[in-house]
Each structure stands twice: as C-alpha cells, then as structure tokens.
Length: 143
Image 1 (cartoon, one colour):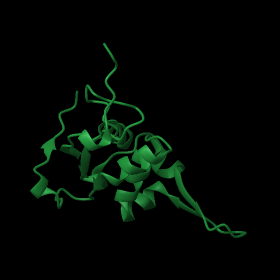
Image 2 (cartoon, one colour; image 1 turned 180 degrees about the vertical axis):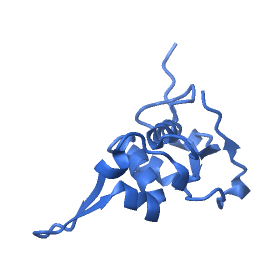
Image 3 (tube, helix red, strand yellow; image 1 turned 135 degrees about the vertical axis):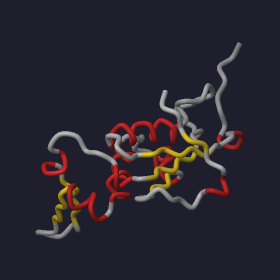
Image 4 (cartoon, one colour; image 1 turned 60 degrees about the vertical axis):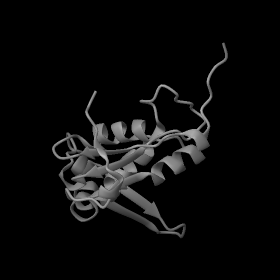
C-alpha cells in the first residue's frame, strides 16, 4: 500500500460562498484559508495546490473583536526614507473592507507559491452580491 499523492492536473475544484456578516474576521479568514488550501479534502497534499475557490460576501459587515479597530494598523512602506504609511483598521474597514479580509486570509496561507496560487482563487466582495453565479457556488456550512 503506497501513500496517495495528489497532482495539480487531476484536482477537482468546487466553488464555495462564505458569508462574513456578523462573524469575526479572523474566523472567516481561517475558514477561507483552509478551503483554499484544500484541507477539508481527503486527498489533501501539503505541497500541491489542491484547494477550492472561495467567494467571501458581506466583507464590510465582518466584526473585529476587542480594540482591534483602533489599535491595529495596516502599514506599507515605499522603500524611501519617511515612506511609511499607516492606516487604522477602522478607516480601512470603512473604505476598503475587501483589502482587510484579503490581508487576513493572506496571513493564514503558506508563504510560498502554493499560498500565492491559493490567494488567487479567493474572491472578496463588500456587499451581498457577487459575480460568480455562473460557477454555481455552494454555501459553506460551518463544521
């Protein structure tokens, strides 16, 4: 009996919808990262991109617990002296809630090519409507 190793070419991908309304952003991001990696499948292989597609809706209604909205910052640096830009998460959630959720999901994926490919399969929308109706996504039932 040999160990089964999945191949990227033979992976069957499905589409799932996650509703982030009223749920903690970290819980939604952790669930999305697990689906994007394919950890819910029986043929999960760590070094193969065998995950599914994820559509996250209602990103603007995701909840940050505690004082994260005031104390957490999104930081970017241009590479030049004095080029640090900081944005408070309260402002980020008001202007770009998709980016806040995407950063949370990105932080929970591996920092290699498998993680980059997986993040490409994540579609995030601020409202309840999405553009993936043609793919017939299924609602993800929390386990």
